[in-house]
Length: 575
Image 1 (tube, rainbow, N blue to C red):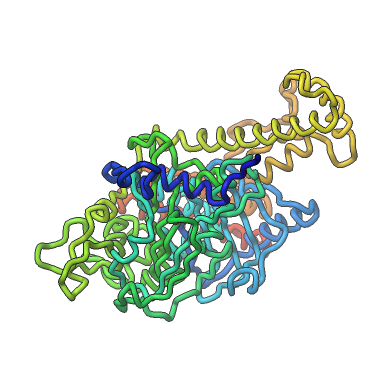
Image 2 (tube, rainbow, N blue to C red):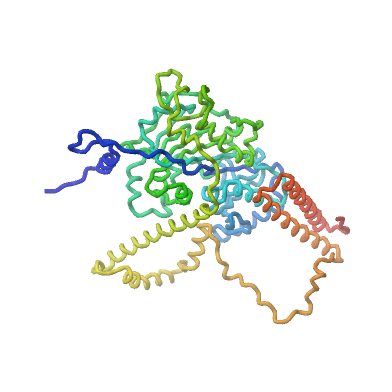
């Protein structure tokens, strides 16, 4: 005789485990106990910002960007620049993107590391000269305010001027809740102002893939499954559209369903609109992508690694920032990113509803889960208890000591995944090459494979150290420059060296005097910019910030005057 497993064996075992079907001999399904939902963390997971500057690129910055891009083209790969963000150099890409690649907007230069993607135009379009995208790990680890302040200081340092403003382009506000699930029978419990709804089931192949060896760098981006935004988001999108605030019953919406039992991985409401909400299993995404940087923040709130976590992500585009209203804020106030940070909870409440609405008043949430009643007015249906937890999001950063564990968690996870891949490749190599390989241990396998690896390293283009440097550049990690060695200090002082006091004296010649003033002004600009950055990080008063910005503007004017005198051969210098 022989036997085979049913193709639906995983679904049947899962249904038995979740007590949704009865076992043979059972009179009825066993009752499953579900813990109460627990709020883990809430914050910004993705942030796009537009840089508004009608003046365009300064000449000196255009030259620097062209030089770095020329180096990248000459090397045929990204090159690390002198601009630092979040402790890591920004890499210049070999080319920008045209309008068809950039979601309708062309970008001449692309600078990027793991924390920031900065796209820059040669000329402003609708006032937009650049767009910044802050990464998820950076926002959670550094906090949105610190990341925003560092970005602002970086751009002001690159431009050399304080003019220009930042404008919110797109924000993903998210709230992670533990002990929740996404089920088909819940969809009739939502009252929404969304016109469209899309459901994303966890495909069988994707679920089964989690139990195998990780796919490493070739893993499918989870954003593709959940309809994430294009890599190059169009900053002009929705500038002239109204936010969709039309109420429509759930039954009247179009639904796209891909079933695998009752296992759903996510639901998207008004996907791609100015206001949208995406609910998805964050734990499933982590299993598939290996992006574990958020886990330490969960663990601080009681997550042990076995619970299910559902992310509720409110996605807001340009039209939403223009039309949404928050009490106490004037029109267009949410365009300002610093003002927006002060009202994250208020904006999230506009989407999911207030945790404690006024008695007797209908809930005006854009979407909420309800308990159906006999009332014909769906807006008066009471809010579901689980949704009250979703509404009660507190956008407070986790303790600093916990946030600093995020990089360690992600790095350990990345190394572990690659070790498993290496181990699997070693097992396969021994199985193919050694007839009696079953008797080997890993130590002997490494010993026997080492000479073959040495031969591979001697192949042209396979030098190990060079490949490590290229891979570090790809991972946006610091690279040790071994070829740059500091000169040895002379044994005795050289007689032609100037006295230190002479270094601060104004030179006699016209050209030397203009050059001296230029270097002095640039040094003072850097000093004031460092003070300005520290003041923002320490949340200094608005008066102190204005004083430092005025000082920086003064040094900028002095630098420009020195540069003008140097370029035009001025005979006199006026301080």
